[in-house]
Image (cartoon, rainbow, N blue to C red; front, top):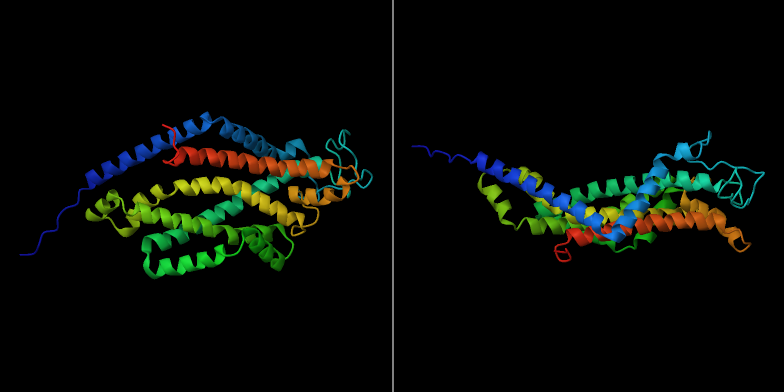
Length: 310
């Protein structure tokens, strides 16, 4: 007589998963509440809100340049104009570029850079880290040796070499940073998956007949993303800092409305007392990086069980 297959317990598994979803939802509400209670994190969020609104509302603050939204308009009759004039409230650069335009539209350029690079690197890093951590074996060996090679080269030097080889272009800066940054997410994701795989609820999912893909999608992946969120928040500031560095040394298009470009244009005037170009643009890079570091540190304090306040 043929063996009768033991029926699964879909109701029990579904109920457990629903309970897990409710628990995660409550957990993230607590994260938001505890994050907002942190004064330094709240300061970072306020700074980011102002910069994001400036980037989104750029056409309302400064009219778009007809020659291209991300191209600095030039006023050759007002070279090195100091701040305070109605036409150029924050002054102009040694090449007649309007500093206010560069600051406002540079916020949009920086937001585009950060979101694109971090979005690409998170997706690629999660995919490669999952391949290594969940499948293991030869996949783990290949991915981690590739990660070791990438991590052996300093980020800035690696990005500089790639961007220089591809040629001066904002798009090439994005590509260079994406190539450099994905490895850290792959390593973090692999470590998290190896840890989560040891939990009893993963073994229980296999026992009731769940496929490997369903176990990964429903049980392993959602419980491995916490450090990825923290790292992505920190990298939103780091990416713009390195991107501004590459623009500063001439690896972006000339005339691009970008903070690093502004600092590059204004550096020659600092010794002559024309401080405003480099000061305003450098201040924006500083505020952007500071804000994301404050928010990232706040999230890490809340999400890391070793530092979580009770």
